[in-house]
View 1 (cartoon, rainbow, N blue to C red):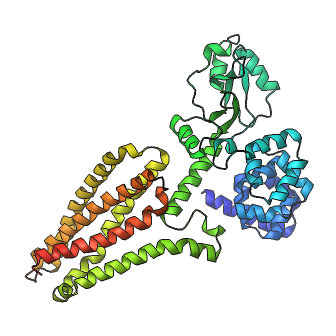
View 2: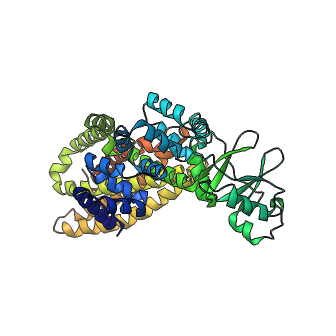
View 3: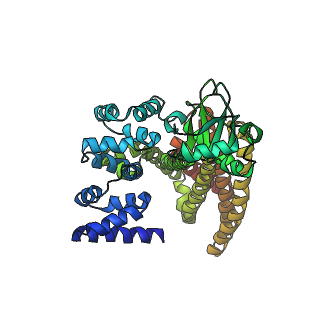
Length: 454
């Protein structure tokens, strides 16, 4: 339904731009969420984008649009924006979004924008830029509410109504002591249900989950997801709060991390295909496909070594695809489960034997089930042949061995990479599928050779 609405929005914008219906276009811009407008914006021609952008006069709204655009589209479009307007837009953006977008720009242009921004805003942005790209410090919002523990609930509400109107996301009231150290936190709900004269120190939560500015951003995302927080405070080495990482940024992190891992496991790099050139896409995929190529060559020589057996029993060839396919599929499933578990923190290296034994057990059970099914199919398909019984047993045992070994390898490889401090998502996919293909073919022909007396 939502996709249909985006299509209607895009078609309406194109039609109104063609007619020059300024009033209607302005109304649509005001009423449409920037997340939807950013998708429609991508579907417009460069000329229509400029026309639509010229009708947008709210710098905060434009800042939201910029932060939602694809990186390539943002970089392409920002070149057409007049410099002073660009500075005004960055002045009105949340500091974390501004810092993130400035890192994408040319260094000279980024410095020029920072030098022209309001001092308070530019100082906040420069502070964020001083942290590593993948750290909590680079993500945090420096606008937050921190009040001393003696302040009453009534005074907090008054402060929210008068002093903190510009705070982007006032999820929590952070409580500090006389030395400005973080000592507690209160939700807005707690604030309105207690007696107005009750001080923060009497109803604040003291069991805090905090992160440092240099904490890895994926670790921050895991903490927010685990505890269902709307924001997590970032504190310095003296336990003074310097910012917060909000749930909207965490969603972006989880989305990016999941996408990166999927692309890495497929051996196509970390970038979306629309941001890759033909040459770069080819260069990234080449080494991983070479691993598959070597696996195919190895399987070719294994099958070639059993050429005489195939000549006597051509029916053996009929089951090669299903044996390799079943092994490859369960290997991919196991490796995906383990890589995801490592990425989300559910699985760690101490669970090595527990994880592989569990996946091996699953592989054996599934292998027995499908081994029986495919063995029965082989028995009835070649019922007229004298060797049909042994063939069905060979196929069944090959399926069991293939799926069991595949589950073992699929769960073991990413854990080994994790122990070696190598990103499990990078090489798990190609290595697992290639090795399983080789092992499956070899096991199949060895079992068949023994049972059929070859």
